[in-house]
Image (cartoon, rainbow, N blue to C red; front, side, top):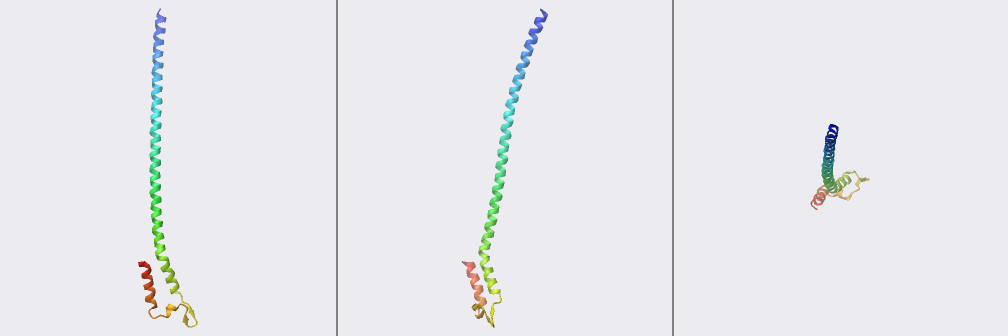
Length: 119
């Protein structure tokens, strides 16, 4: 009779341990799912942050290129004119560019440059 009581008590105890292990397994599975959700949320947040940084960097690069393009658009024609009128074009004894013979040719050059900048 004592063995039967011991076996019945041990059986209940082992069923109780099995129930606790099942409950612990379910809790661990639930916590793993929560951790996976937190990790995925963190990954999405980091990806969004990196995309924002890339976008700001691209916007800054676009703005810089725009400024350089505008500067080139404004100053390249003036450099071309200064280069052309700064060369020594001489055919025999006469200059090859007629404006160089004008009395106020230099002033007209700067007037043309000023008008270009205003326009």
